[in-house]
Length: 413
View 1: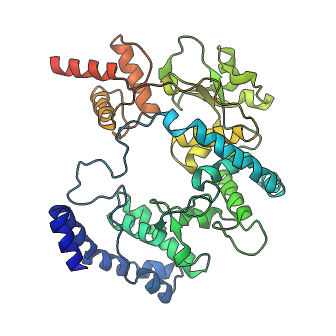
View 2: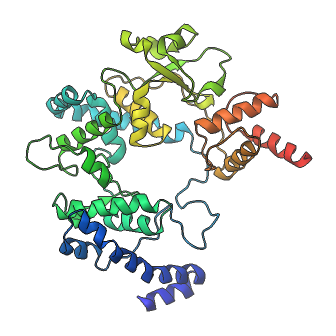
View 3: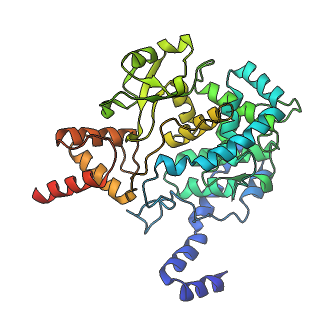
């Protein structure tokens, strides 16, 4: 291994290869692993399981979001160079393909889905959409070993305490025989199974729904979907309420109010000129439910009136684009119509350019969230506030025109 590393250092890149080799043999990582034994033992993990899982375990330094010496100030690995627009993430071709697959699976698992909805109150289409988004209905094979991922993130990651605990729960899962080490495949973040569960979520929410005395989120569709349903319920899912409604916003809508903190009863939004797409009719009970406005692309593209279940799905994966993908896919399983208002074809800005905007907005006191180069809700609202204050076109979207204005003002000051 040393010879291979030295050769790579000469042929490819001296600094990078030497750094990689040095870290691969990091004695601190092995020491950290062994120091976890008392905590694993306290969770009921046997010494034999602990040794089998940690023997010859080496960190995976290709993972994103690691806090490594020499990478200070660098963007996290895997971060997109450009701002990902909704049209990029929610591709119509992908949605249509998954919806067709989901229709067949809905028929195949109709009895199971009906039983899950009766018990948990979560519609089958929502669960199918999560399954489709997470692993393409099991067609996507998770690329990483979960134990390696969780150990690496626990030692080198930016959320060490969180992932250390997940690593310990992963060992507990192995010890109790829920899954074999070779089958413990995961995403780069350590989530496993058909619907992507972290180990702690497995212990909170996993369900044996097929009655075989096993909680098998890897191979059993009933168990995986019922577990996802129980997790949504645990996060506050409201039975009989939609996730959101696509809506047509009235002319001149103030895009700066499109934040979760501004809520009004759904019926009040409709009384103020918002119209639901395709003439959809909300259930009478929904009219009194609190809703907030979502403008994922500022004043471009579709608008949404989001109910509480929108934020419950967001707890499953903290991304508005993820929720829009899952919610829209769930609709498309029983309704083939696309978004009534199409996404725009706005030019994408680089992530670094949006970070520059966020720093400027922070200095001006308009933005108080993290600088991550993503055009999230709070960034969009802050941009709208900046546009208002400087008499620019108010669209709540990171455009080249706004960046140019910021740079010119900075140059004058």
